Image (cartoon, rainbow, N blue to C red):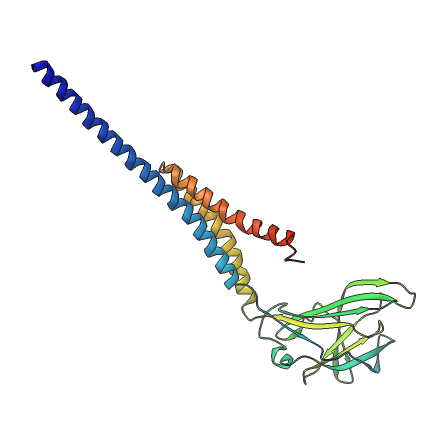
Length: 261
C-alpha cells in the first residue's frame, strides 16, 4: 500500500515538473517570438522613417523657360568676333521674382541648346544670389551691359562653319528678360532652374539620414549579439532586408510593365 502511494506521488510530481517545463518552454518561445518581431518592426519602421525624411528633405526646383521662339534681333562683337543676338526673350511668369534667388554657391543655372543640321551645342551658366559666378565665367561689358560667356557642355560639328571654339553669351536684363549671343543658330531650348533656399541644408540632412540608418541597424545587431538576444537580431536583419528588397521589386516591376518608359 505504501509503495503504491509513493508511486502515485512520483507520478504526480513528474507530471507537475513536466507541466512546469512545458510552461517554461512556452514562455521562452513566446519571448523569442516577441523579440523577433520587435527587431523585425524596428528594421521596417526605421527604414520607412528614412524614406519619409528623404522625401521631406528633397530639393524643390523651380523652372522657367522662354515664352516664344527667339528671333535674331541684332549683332554684337566680342574679341573681334561678331555674334548674332537673340532676344530680349520673355521668360515664363515669375522669373523676375526667382532671379537671382537668395542662396549660396551654384543654386541656379541657365541651360541653352541649339540643334541644327550643321551641329549641336549645349551650354550652361550657374551662380548664386550675386549673379553668375565671376570666377567661373568670363564677363564682357558692352555699352554698359554685362554679358557672360557660358560653359560649353557639349558640341558636335557637322559643317566647317559650325565652330565649336566660338562661344555662347548670356545677358540677364533687370526687366525679367534674357538675351543670347551666338553664331550657332536659333536657340532651340533655354531653361532657368533653381533650388530652394535650403537646398544645401537639405542635402546635408539627406546624407545624415543615409549614414544614420545603417548605423542604427548595426548598433541593434551588436547589442542583440552581446545580450544574447539572437531572435531580435534575426528579426532586425529580416525587417531591414524586407525594407530594402520591396522598393527594388516595385521598381523592377514598374520597368517590366512599362510604367517608367
